[in-house]
Image (spheres, rainbow, N blue to C red):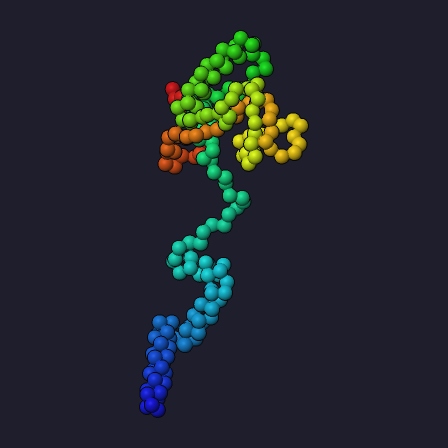
Length: 197
């Protein structure tokens, strides 16, 4: 048993010596080997130092630090971009129409309305939240979804509430938007157009 422990101790010592010799050979000197251990210790304790060290050693560059709040997703703007491209809705809403006559505005609205309605029907399946028509009496049952039904007026007590339907509401049952083009900036509703001579 003593011989086994002695052999184990000698083997461990030889392994440590061999590891030390390899580290010194790789570093070039004992001083450089200790410096390497010091650098490794600091890198494990300091993430910024580790990132800089990795960059100097030819590893992956450290990711850039964010310069401000993250940019929100432009995904919700895709439908607005479609309404612009198919009905010129943003052009109409951004235009100053204060000097235009009622007949001129009416004609523009009629055209925009037709095209925008066609675009909505093509890309969304929209249905009423409540099936009744405006003016009918409706009962709002307990457990109703407040994001789908808003109870207004003299609201006291607990549901069920009975009142006159002011608006049936709208909800989207299905979205059929085309896939976004690769590399396209979702915040651009319509690209600028430049006519060359």
